[in-house]
Structure formats: C-alpha cells, structure tokens
Length: 227
Image (cartoon, rainbow, N blue to C red):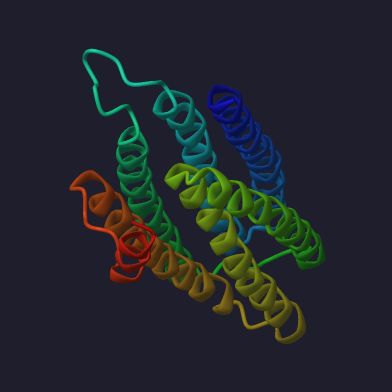
C-alpha cells in the first residue's frame, strides 16, 4: 500500500513538472515574438524571465525524478536533498537573468527607442498572466501534497511572473496612452529587482534544506504532542 502511494505521488509530481515545461515553452515563444515585433524591452525582459523559468522547470522535472529514488547502500538517507541542490542552481540561473535584464534596460534608456503595436504586447502579456495563474496554482497544490521543494520553487517563479507581467502591461498602457517611452525600460528594471528577491528567497530555502535546519517550533510542538 505504501509503495502504491509513493508511486502515485511520484506520478503526480512528474505530471506537474511536465505541465510547467510545456506552458513555459509556449509563453517564451509568444513573448520573444511580441518583444521583437513591438520593440519593447520590458516584454523581452519577461521573455528572459520565462526562459529561466523553463530551465527551472526542467531542473525541477529532473530533480523530482531523482529525489524520489529509494535509499540505497550509497545513499542510506535517500536522495531528497537533490531538490535542495536544484533550488540552488535555479537561484544562480535567475541571478544571471536579472543581470541581462538590467543591461538591456540600461541600453534602452540610453537610446530612447520607441514601441510599436503596443496592443499586441498587451494581449500577449494578458495571455501569459492567465496561463501562469492556472499553472502556478496547480504546482503549488501538488508541491504541498507531495512535499516537493522543486515544484514549490517552480510555482513561485510562475507566480512571480504574474506580478511582473502586470507591471509590463501597465507600462505598455502608459506608453500607448501618453507616448512617454521611458516607462518601458524602467519597468524592465523593476522586473529585474523583483527577480533578485526571488533569488534571495530561493537561496534561503535551498540552504535550509541542505544544512538540515530544524523544523519550526510549531511543528516540533505538534510532533511532541503526538508522541
């Protein structure tokens, strides 16, 4: 019975990771096309953000498969910490993405390039917001059921995409209505700063998992009560 439950959890985690990979791949394609078509650096910043999310989704998929391997002679405590390592790798990759975004935004501030067909960019970003809300909710649900740090980190990335995408939509609307082009690179910089916060949170969680930080006091109290 225990084996069947474990297999069911593994299947659920794997399916969720695959869903994230597919959704990220589609959104990256849309954002790259929209960014080039409109000339918006904030949309291209979001495409970079989503590209890192795709890498994170692939890492989550691989780590989920590896971390669920049973304990063996070489790993008597199992392979669960693989998810902590994957979280660390994801954080470093996202850090690189934020650097690229800052660079592109700075170049756009210097050249003061305009945006064309802002309506197309707004439409693409709204689609991105809807997809990320649905997929992140699914990943959060599965991560809580299966206690998967990798899926939780992946869900966090997608949830962050929602807020940064909303900021991009706002910037495009302002540029469309007022013609003030500086809002586009400024919002791209804000996206980069928000990504840095994600990096900090993910590094903190990964570090705690890898160094075997003790459980929160509340959970310790509940365990003692049960015993």
